[in-house]
Length: 302
Image (cartoon, rainbow, N blue to C red; front, side, top):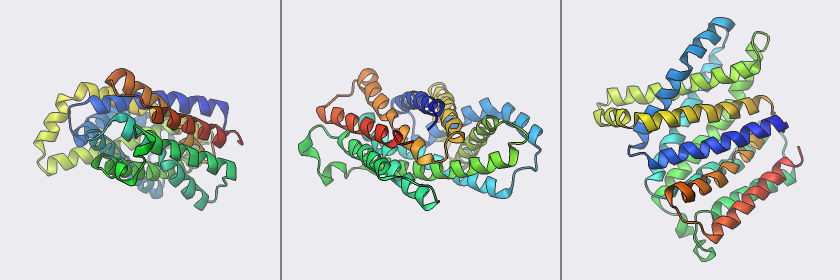
């Protein structure tokens, strides 16, 4: 990976952990928080979207791009709702690593299926990241049993991980298509910001329409009540994933970007201990070392 791409992903990881702390501390439901955060990002980026479409031409983008965007948006909704619901049942230090690190192996497998190459050292790195993820939620090595992970919080974390896997792969393919269509008109970085903005529209509007059609007045009221913290999270979400999309334009294999993003687990654990008074255990320390070792192995051959 390019050094600039690495720096962008690490910076995004710090911000990603920060908005997860906001998600943990918010008083609303996952649906309300997702809606408020997404719509905040929509409003922020809409003027840019209009400018971008005016410059490239409204009919430039093919229908397959919009289909990919729709799938990505739905996957983001699955991820966000799964994550926030999971936080209602377990610590950030438990849920965050599972939701973020498990997709490493999944995305790796999908990218290989799409024709990209990963060597044995990179797969070992991915495995270490996943093993670190297994250790982080437990308080002692004696607790590493199947039953320790059979709970509602971990179930929703797995749902969130599935959403992450899908949108990570789809976003890279959609971004490739977008830059192919527009690179002669605008720089690829402009396209990354555009993709970010339309993605938030695809996330926020369906949730809003669902609440209106289903008569979920409580969700709408809750979204309004938590609008300040959710808006902060939305801006952080936009900034965070915008940096990741920039990095994707500099990297061929998205699985390496996904692997590096797991350094956010370290930041998330530290923030959970510092800001939310969550406990730090020896097993969490070992898990962090495995995750960092896995990241180094994954990137050292590129």
